[in-house]
Image (cartoon, rainbow, N blue to C red; front, top):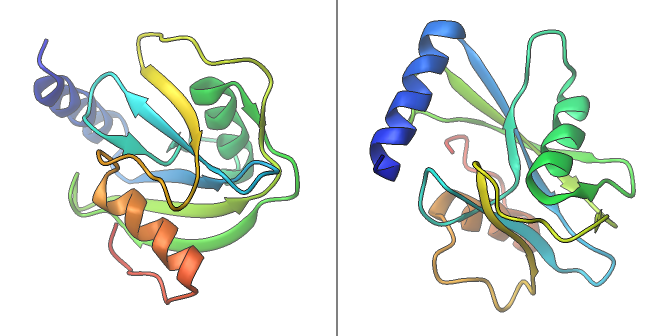
Length: 152
């Protein structure tokens, strides 16, 4: 199945099962100041790790779950809320909460699975060319101390 079709089907399922969606993403840095990015099987580019917040789950629990599932990573210092964004690119019902996480570490290298192709740490001044625009914008906002764009 083509990545674009797979992503559309995935998002269509969420529209039916969750009329309003909430996601969480991590600006996750290791002890060396490198940022964690993930590459998915169903959409192109490198992304900040994260995913949906399930019913009955806190955003911090979702953040820890997504870091664990997508990158075999654990949170070090307590996460700090950075921003909240309206993600109108996917649906008109999606919001993304972004946290700054320091001293994140991988418990083991991440092997490719059905969702994740790769999970790697990058130096802020040597980010991959294929980083998504929204991920690059969130990094710039944090790194340069500028007000976050309200849109994802």
